[in-house]
View 1 (tube, rainbow, N blue to C red):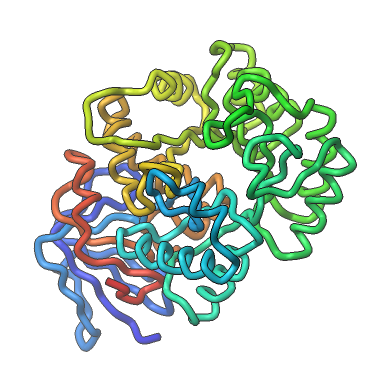
View 2: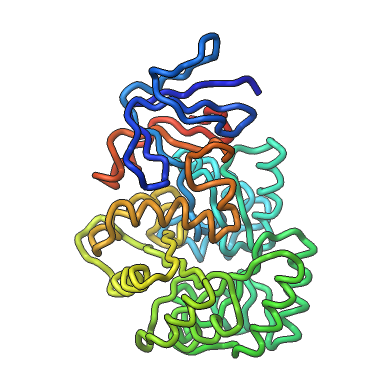
Length: 378
């Protein structure tokens, strides 16, 4: 790939120094070669001028579901659709996600392994989309959360066997439902359906294969069990049953990531109480990532920026909110050396937006251009 220079009005590079005025990003072979200013431009290099726009790292959606529609009846539609229909929906959603400035997307549960196929199609250039990390169907009990999407496993040995099959199919992550959830009527969001010993053997097996484990957890008992088992990320982490300082201390000691989701209608002024707890965890030293649970009912696949606006209303600074979907998210995914900031040697995934997201996080909803690996895709 030829060397290119991308120009903008301001650069927010994700390293949290002062924004760089009149930046020039030098990109070669899909990576950032150098960060300069307009006064230091080499001659005879192709220039792409984004005018008065701000350059920011590509966003990372750390928790979403490409097979879901985001509509009020999304689960019912999912149950009716066959593999081909689900693949078409997921492919359409992947393109929408990329155009919204989400350059990396972790899918946290599909049906039939659809996203494994889609990820490979995107990587080979046969379908447009962001960088995808996928879990395939989640692991759960026969009557547990997401049973209609998942692979059932009743105990530790069954969890290990089920995870092994998913790993052989090529998943990047293994997701396990440790508590009930809102999408599955009749499940108890506070009760843990797996103990720490059962989860520990799962984690050992998945880590042995070089993959990571995410745990769906709402209740405090489930959070504790998942942390003690050594999972890599706690999805939702709602603390239903009460916030526990001793569990938070264990989260920090182990370096476990909290991936909190801000789903549903997000245009009002309300602030979820669970989000305030995540801010408390963040400022005490925990690693907190924000996602939107994109695709579930009333949660469009491509509106991560609205979740960040809710976080700011809850007390997050704009910098904390942006970091949660860039640098910290990249670290959680094991891609901190590749993504999350605009620095020399990293992949050239970035956006050109109207406004400064460090002053108005809503500017992340005003994406004019998207660059993925040095290629302009919007």
